[in-house]
Length: 69
Image (tube, rainbow, N blue to C red; front, side):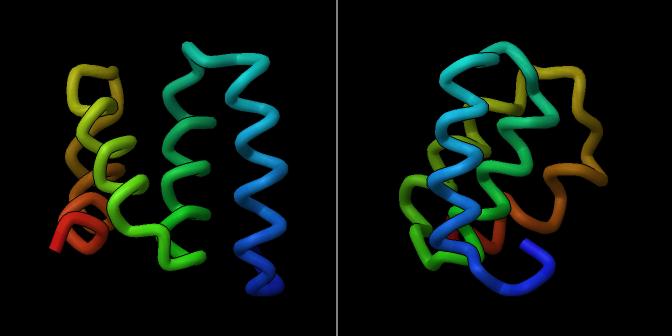
C-alpha cells in the first residue's frame, strides 16, 4: 500500500481475508487496497458490509463514500 502497488496489495489482502473473514480491520484494509486499485464497485460493497462491524465512522467515513461515489 505504501508503495502504491495497490493491485499487488489487493491480491495479498484477498488471501488474508479468505483466511480471517471475520477480521473487520483486515477487511477495511482490503477495501482500501481495492479503492487504490480503482475497483470501486467491489470496494463499495465491501465497505457496505462493514457498517455493522465495530469500526467507527472515522474508519469508514472517508473511504466508503469515495468508493461508492
